[in-house]
Length: 166
Image 1 (cartoon, rainbow, N blue to C red):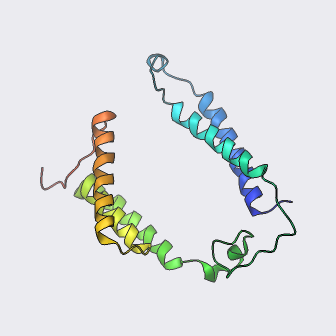
Image 2 (image 1 turned 45 degrees about the vertical axis):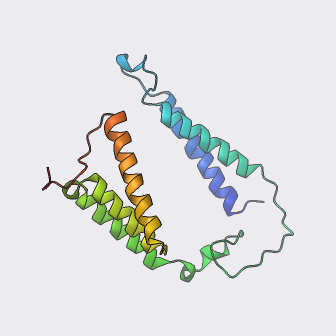
């Protein structure tokens, strides 16, 4: 039986297969052929992971006689929540979109660490998490660790602090 999960799994399988094919046939530059990690390594891995996940969803047995009970929220397995737009949290979604837009505009001026920490903290706040100490700790540590990996390991410059400090 074709339900919502299987339709999404089929579309993920088609997308992952095409993405894997395109990343595998990507023409490398001459100096990239002998690198340990090539530019198409991550896309190939992502496509393989997508193919495995979609096949795992497709081969799962479904019981058509199963009675699904619920209150119409997202945790229902039959997709009934998709039929009623009143079940969506539109305020949270629009708030996160506005927050992402503000993040993208202010990233250059405020610096990566400050802007990303504020984005992660406010995003968690918009989603309803009220453990402020945990939000602050995770947002600052995640942005510093990610900045360190991009700046020092990958050697890609990201301005860490606001433009008026340095």
